[in-house]
Structures are given as C-alpha cells and as structure tokens.
Length: 52
Image (cartoon, rainbow, N blue to C red; front, side):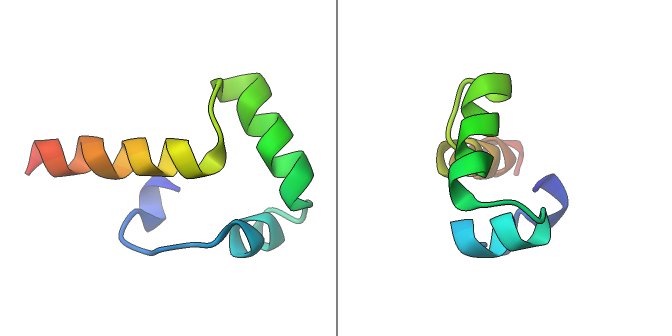
C-alpha cells in the first residue's frame, strides 16, 4: 500500500491484488493492524502529506 499511496485503490482491487476476499482482507487488517484497510490507507496518506 505504501508503494501505491498515490493511487486510489478500491477494496475490490486491493482484495483482488492480494488474492483474497474483501471480508477476509478487512478481518486480517483488523486482526493485525487494529484498523480497516480504508482507515489504514487514509492514515498513510495523511502521514505522507505531513511529511511534505
């Protein structure tokens, strides 16, 4: 995700790239990162903007 921060990937596209379902992707994110993929991506973009 960090490498594609400038792209607006949908949950469907991200799940397809990772060969999983959207439900499983969201479950794994919550389990390992304590966040949804959308929130995590948003936080990455915000952190990147603060660096500029």
